[in-house]
Length: 160
Image (cartoon, rainbow, N blue to C red; front, side, top):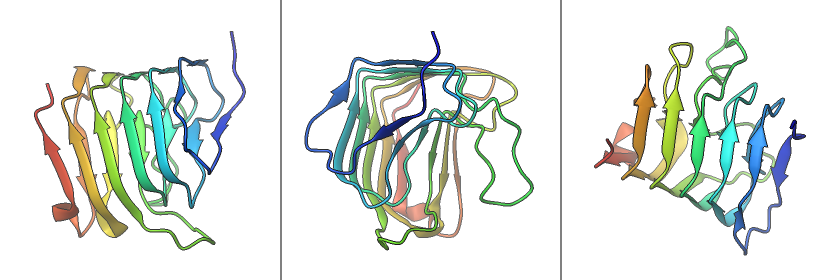
């Protein structure tokens, strides 16, 4: 069953859960400028780009999900065209000028393949307060890749 691209509404006051996103042409995303969002209890699998792209949000919790081999589309040539991870956290062109901050990514299961750059990719150039903990990683590229000049704003701990 194919699903259309899933865009999560910017006013994220209630949980968005129990969805199965399979062969999504693009990815699930939280719109730039979103605040206090929760992605819980979903299965995101085989999307063309990353399974979740969440730039320029404040207060995002991603927990209890399964991300399975997302990011099948080849990367581009620019530094902002790396999208073959299950989750990408970065800063993008944002008319709301919202800083990417206060994210908790925990208690998820990630399956990766050798074609992916990582299970989770974080560009730490313009992020603050990102925590990745207590996740399970399986597959060939079962790592959290943190790049950029402010890596001290990202904490990765207790993952297996």
